[in-house]
Length: 345
Image (cartoon, rainbow, N blue to C red; front, side):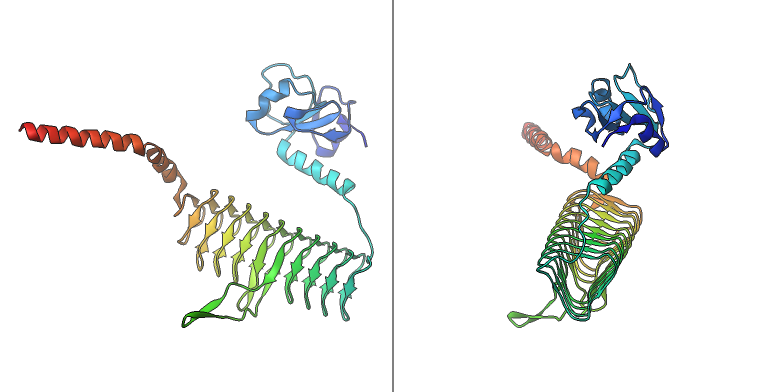
């Protein structure tokens, strides 16, 4: 497919500077631009590439002021990052495979309620009493346990396992290999051994949740482990039993949230963040990569380090930490000088 720059600008409500008739057939990174591709510039650190890129069109912010002549057509938009995100979503929608129907062999138990235009891939299994909404896509080798509810327009990719009684909302995406509803890690000491505590709750994913590949969300001991509306979880994230994750919170890969912790709305967790159990992480908290949280966190906090503390203080402390060998050497020299002075007295 080919589109003119002026048509893309009209779609994005942007303004063309340059040749509006130039044809675009693909997208590219600005540093790897090729003719007849569209790139974008959102981060000022990449500005130098715009003066040499071979891309035919570049999306830029409205307030972008080039320091010299650019070789490409510009499309000015309120936010270049938002604009490219919208375009990529449109492109994916056009190019994404659209499987249909019930492939064989697959197994759909008695009493399953299937909505309209559902896709079930080969070797998928749907247990008794499950309710599958309209336009749901269940890819090959997925397992949908008894009594599972899946809302409209949700996509369950290959190899996902959803245990019995769990609830998945509408417009959710669960990527390959993820397990939802496995037992929470509950064991009670019994002498020298441990006795398993039955995990009789479930997992609830509200609408517009996306869960990355090979993530695990454990079922509650009682009640529900709940992932609220709009949450985005990256690959290999672990959510333990009875955790609640607030609306529109995002977690990068390898985060781990221990049991019964409550995470607020609009939080942002970097990769490999670890949060201990029975804590309260309030709204709009930001945790840098590899932060280890062992206490409650107030709303709007920005933490780093393990154990975690205020990010600004952490940076100052880290500067000193890096200088510890030098400081130790200076301290040792001072001690020697003091001892020498004492001997002279």
